[in-house]
Image 1 (spheres, rainbow, N blue to C red):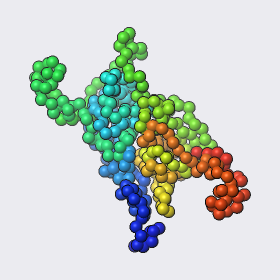
Image 2 (spheres, rainbow, N blue to C red):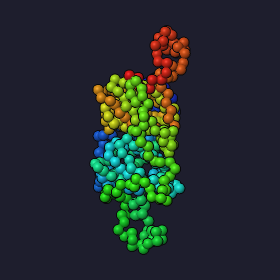
Image 3 (cartoon, rainbow, N blue to C red):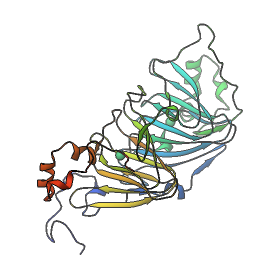
Image 4 (spheres, rainbow, N blue to C red):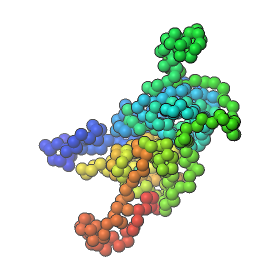
Amino acid sequence: MSWSPFGETEQPPFGPAPAPLAGPELPSFRFPFSTKTPKTFDGGTAKEATVAEFPVSEKLAGVYMTLEPGALRELHWHANAAEWAYVIDGRCRVTTIDPENRCEIVDFGPGDVWYFPRGHGHSIQGIGPGTCTFVLVFDNGYFSEFGTFSITDWVGHTPPEVLSKTFGVPPETFADFPKKEVYIASGPVPPALPQEPSPGSLDDPPLTHRYQLLAQKPDQFAGGTMRTASMLEFPISTTMTGALLIIEPGSLREPHWHPNAAEWQFYLKGSGRMTVFGSHGRARTDDFAVGDVGYVPQGYGHYIENTGSDTLELLVVLNNGIYQSVSLTGWMAANPDLLLATNFEVKESVFAKFPKDALIMPK
Ligand code: MN
Ligand code: MN
């Protein structure tokens, strides 16, 4: 019988914790995404990490997608999740429609982020040169990219007579339309967008779906930098916050927790190690390489170390538009040394040289 902090007969008092987190040992918080084989389409690829593949990730799911020039991730919407994305490489064009029927068409490049509120229609097309690679994150771990509401699937399952009445064209018009979901279609690279809209043509929604995260001046710490896109910086992103963390060799993102959000991670560069603290004497450490996904349940303590000789870069995506984080250094700095001495049962002088403010990324 394995060791339990509750004794041999006592049941752990975890209450209604999700099953993967309910045991006396914590599960792995790493998903080896880079080793998974994507689904391939004409002009693109996609693979996903949902609770089906990564059971602990209940609140957030992710997709890694590539689009060749001209390849179109077709018009679709998501009934049960908002979509956040980060462009890793290449360029793409996005079209969106909001519930007031306003449309935004905008190009994305490396370091750009998009956010589509749940239910907003959208498409994504590679515009070259080269492959466009991006990561999508959804604020629902049960969301599957292969169960989206696609325009071809819908039109293909609508009788031609209804389509005829809807569009005011003969039913035969739809004879050659696909009968099932296309998902990714291949076509010509569209022409460049006009520099200036022609007079009277603009129909943009009031909030843009694009945020240029890499262009943001980062928060600078002793051991690295952080760029953050919460709804403060990116107002449309009301249910998700994204951040790009760059951690220098030998440094770490210090121990902290997020009171209001679970955390989904994608490792972009370097090598790292994350330890998650789950109370009841439970802590779990996993090593992360490029292409791996990590996850931290809401409120769980965690820290990330750079274990390599190069910078460690990762995306952090939280399922809340308001960014909240409490750091161990800041928490202790906010309490008197005498209290800390009592709490840790050591001399008060021990804390004289401790930081007097949150460090976030110490060197
Ligand atoms: Mn989508
Ligand atoms: Mn975190």
